[in-house]
Image 1 (cartoon, rainbow, N blue to C red):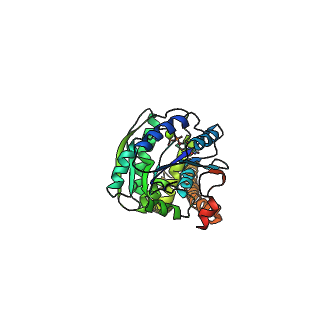
Image 2: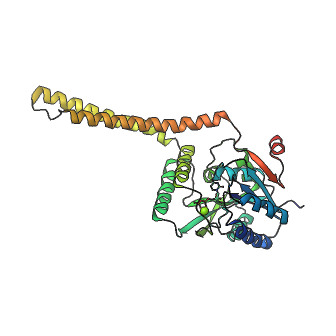
Image 3: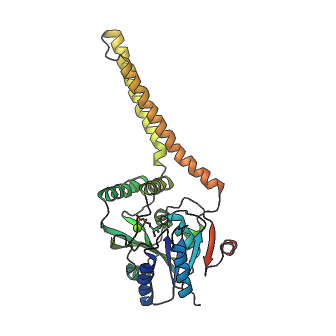
Length: 320
Ligand code: UDP
Ligand code: MG
């Protein structure tokens, strides 16, 4: 078989309702692209019929390649794994639920051919997502930009086209905390956006629970900023300033004015709880960083594979 030019990387977790339609849409797109296409489907430990449907696709269409994780490792890891097996001259990362319209690939390819190594899809609007999701996403991307040194564009997800050079760079990154839209921005090169409206999910329920989204957001900030570590310093300075002011006040009241208002247990109780919570929050932030350092030094494999189809074996890739 010919070396593919386009590798489409698609993470799949319990998407049995979407796989058929996704394949149909991608098949149409692949027909219209000039050049060989491969579909790399990454089954992230699905518990529904997704894997058998993927096997079936592989059976029908040799351009479909897949790997299946031994358990659920999460979206970012699934994408990472897919990128590890990309053979094309560029890779497109997209979701399986058709929220990322496959037809946008044409515009991405056009930009790529103009010489951009990274073409990311930037959302114009979020159809049918709750105001809470829209607001938190809006706020998060702006906070992240303020806190990090890396210029991570707002309102972008993982839907993007990456040139081979960038795929190789991402594959060479050893870290296991993979915040792909951040790593992609970190890599540099010529980057540009294509605008799109994010569709509602074709079928099925969202796999990103609030907890997973929160974890992803924390990962993004911790992996790309050390500003939270400085919080303790600033809060400490504020507390010291308040303490100094109080010392001066108490001395003044003792020496010149006998009616000191600074009395009572309630004041002391509030002060204890306030400082206690500040200290605990700062320790928690330290813990977030230390936990990640611990994860990294253990250097376990990022994922475990139980089955592949049409891909070069992991071991061969690693020894390459
Ligand atoms: N996904 C995955 N592993 C997970 C959760 C999600 O591979 O643990 C996949 C999912 O099948 C989909 C994509 O990641 O293709 C995005 O997930 P989802 O649509 O639930 O989240 P969204 O980003 O749209 O909120
Ligand atoms: Mg989705």
